[in-house]
Amino acid sequence: MGCRDCSRSFLTGDNRVNRVARSGFSVSSAFSCQISAVSDARLADTSFAGTDGAPLINMAAPLRILAVDNEPTITFSLKYVFAGPRYEFTSADSGEAALTRLDANPDPYDVIIVDQKMPHQSGVELVTAIRQRGLNGKIIVLSAHLSSEVRADYARMDVNEMFDKPFDVEELRSAVNRLAA
Image (cartoon, rainbow, N blue to C red; front, side, top):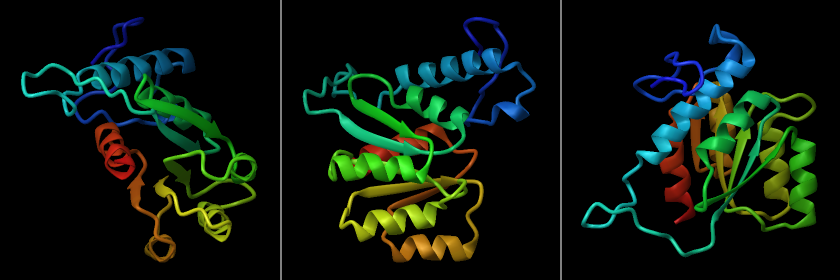
């Protein structure tokens, strides 16, 4: 797929969201390319089509998603992965900011997406704090830092899904839709 603005190919084949630092493009060009590819993939999604192939219109409330990651490129990309009327997307740049949102309204999110490696509070510490508050919501971990020990910690806390970065956009969207169903 190519960027609508610069015509360069950025995300191809498996729709992986890659870090801008590795892209070789300028920040604005890389964002345009990421957005185009993710948007094109989202528009081509037929997993929610009726028997005649026409997209189904979901009149239910949108899926509420909180993404917690200190990397702005990740939350920026996720904003476009989960755009449109089916999703209500919110992001927080730290565990502390996420807990503040959760304390203000303890059950506002259908799915919480958490990064493992963040300053001041790891993903494991954040999920522990979420569970200590009695919130049993669905949690997905996205991280480039998932050792077997960290995976075991998350499994003990009933984390629903774990994905390595870079992640596959379609797999992540499918997991969110499945968990929120």
